[in-house]
Image (cartoon, rainbow, N blue to C red; front, top):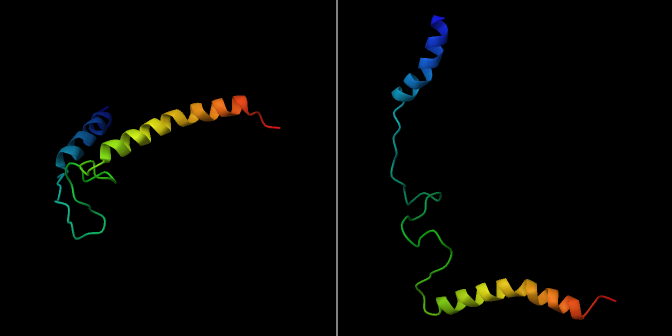
Length: 78
């Protein structure tokens, strides 16, 4: 029965002994990018006209399937 207790206790001791450390990201590396707010998106929401472009994109993307369905309803394939 002693080996069973040792097996249950071993993972906790192994985790406690591991020294988890972190290092700062090196910006000179091609695999690390700048961090912080607005740095992880492919567009700049602070540019002039962003709101108009964003809402136009949302409205077109939402309404396009309905427009296609209505078009196909009144213009059936021959």
